[in-house]
Image (cartoon, rainbow, N blue to C red; front, top):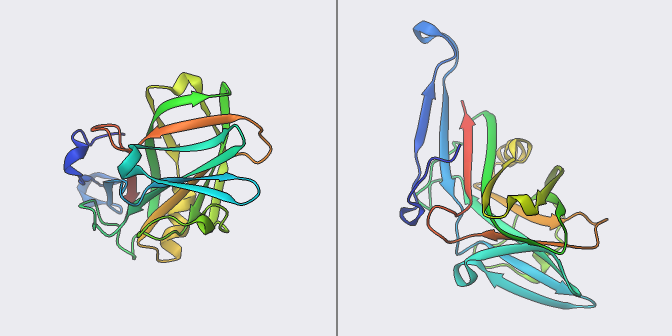
Length: 207
């Protein structure tokens, strides 16, 4: 459900006001969208035993995760829920019905299918630090794959369970960390985070 066309304007919309039945019966739901906050987004590379490389998306135009040579990367996306980036607002009193993100896959390398975990985390909006690479997640959704067939396409990822937990904790940002399955030994994914119409976007339905 990708609706925002001109992401350079950082669009946010209350897209749907839908009743569950005729005559105003049943609870109404609201659907909002919000683009990720590019200056906050980024990735961290780690090379053993103790070397970290931090990149911010507003400098690179992308984020990446997986393994390249001796370095493991993890990608971080920040979706404000309070409208601070011009996006839709999810009130703290809202009950989450569903949530998903859409990401545009620029490249997949070193493996035809990259097993991926997605964590709910917290990291500074002032910039990533090395401690964020392996911080304890607040929640994790089930494993999924990004494939070479996804290159140059959008991938929709269900994040309902993570959004529900963020709401329960009263978080004002949905902050996500992409990482390679710890059992995997290869695979690198690059996600677009800057091109008009291809930036990561969050859609939330709530009542």
